[in-house]
Length: 70
Image 1 (cartoon, rainbow, N blue to C red):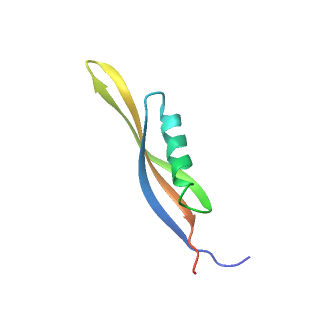
Image 2: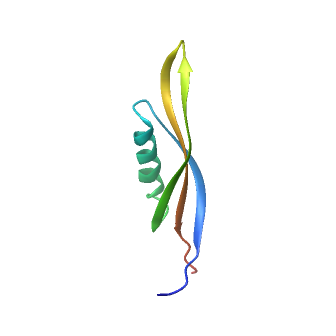
């Protein structure tokens, strides 16, 4: 097993359905440009409210992926 280095980025995703959907959207979109994603850690969940109704679920997530030296 070789030594590894991982990079962490913080992203915020939104969904009109759920926090789980917001996280899923983050991972799917990030996977288009990041390779070898290893962990998604949810740091914060909140909602946007208007006229006493939840409009949007928001998730702040840290993604870690293997850093590759070129």
